[in-house]
Amino acid sequence: MSGPYNYLHNKDINSYTFITVHGIEYFVYLADGSHYFEKYPQFAAYVIMFGFYTNPVKNIPADKNVRITITQIITNYFIANEDKILLFVCEQGDGKQFFRMKKFNGWFTLAGNLKIVKTDLEIPFDNGFTYLSVLYHKRNIHANEIEKALQNFEQDFLK
Image (tube, rainbow, N blue to C red; front, side, top):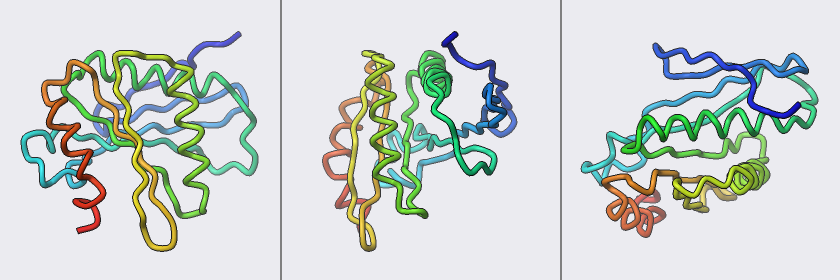
């Protein structure tokens, strides 16, 4: 059976947790991301950094219900918070940031939520790139300002 896993929302730290049929616990977090857009005070306070990780496991089996659960969390978040902007930064400590972005892009495509706008950015950093996605609801009152900021993001980020 495919469908989202049951998840718990910890409102105190704005995070979600769920456990897969394989016993792998996932942590989905939402944290302040305003520093990424500090040059845009009109919406910087609405920027939330989104990410997820698992308890330490060597091999994580393929499980489409993880994708379904995480995309449901994102979709439900935007239903309740049309004014927010989610920023997904691919962790690069292990050199797998490109593959994380590729997987996240695939999840977004499969979810097919046409009410969410997603822009991907590739920022030169150290000896490689930082990959990130910016997501916001089409009805976000700052949509035009967000688009303008994204056009200048690389220059703003590197300064």
